[in-house]
Length: 172
Image (tube, rainbow, N blue to C red; front, side, top):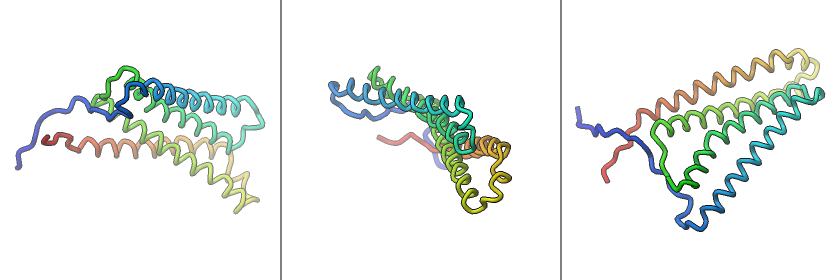
């Protein structure tokens, strides 16, 4: 068996967006405003879909879930970046990094599954118009969301477990 480095990694150092300290407040403001616009826009979509009974259709049901997933995806990465920019501390713990990898993968795969489910609605409407109400019924649509979450959890967990196998110690 070949000798291996047994040093434990406690944190990762992240690259700065810029070395110029004068640009840091502008970058912080830019990312904070983009984050707030994203969160507020998605919350308005969710509120509009849930409050108007005319929008209780399969496409808007999936749009509401997609907005929620997008909000969670943004919340999984941007706040840590804002804290790092504000505090001038450019590091993330090993467990924090793995958690962030898991949640980013989970919400990205979940968004892709929801977009696929959203594409299924017009496909059935165009290709099978007489069977639309039978195929795309509310119980079928509600079951597609937990299925996409299950697929997302399995995929994100598998990829995160594969990252655990990697060695991050190198000779400098």
